[in-house]
Amino acid sequence: MRIFGLLSILLLIAATGEAGEGDSPFVGTWALGDDTCGNATNWSLNSDGSFASENLSGTWSFEADRLSLNLVDLLPDEFTGETGEKFRLDGPYLWQDSDVLVLTVEPERYTLKRCR
Image 1 (cartoon, rainbow, N blue to C red):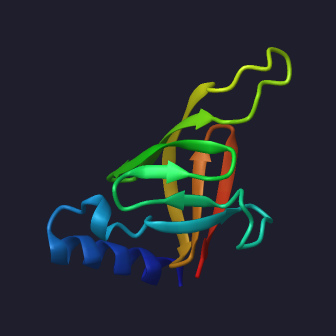
Image 2 (image 1 turned 180 degrees about the horizontal axis):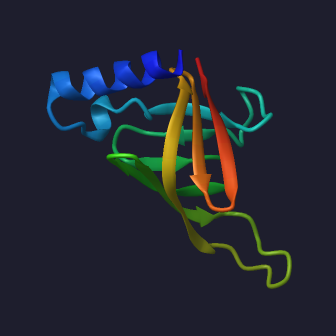
C-alpha cells in the first residue's frame, strides 16, 4: 500500500508538470500523532504555502523528498512570556499510505494523519 500511495503522488506530479502548492498532496488538514481530527491544534497546510494551527503559524514547502515547515509559536514562552519564537522543521518524508505521512526531523519522527 505504501508503494501505491507514493506512486499515486509521483503520477500526480508527473501529470501536472512540476508540482506547485495548489496541486500538492500535502494540502489539507492533518492530525499530529495520536490527535484526532477536529482539534484546533490540527495542522492546516494551505494551497498558498501558508501553515496554521491553534498555536502555530508559518509557511511550508516541499522539494523532492523533503518537507519544510517554517513556524512561529503563538503561545507564550513558559520562561519569558514572549510569543513569536521561530523554528523550522525540515526533513525527509515517507508516505505510509495516501492519508498517513511520516516526517523525520532527527532524532524525531512525526506521524501526520490526513483529516477528511
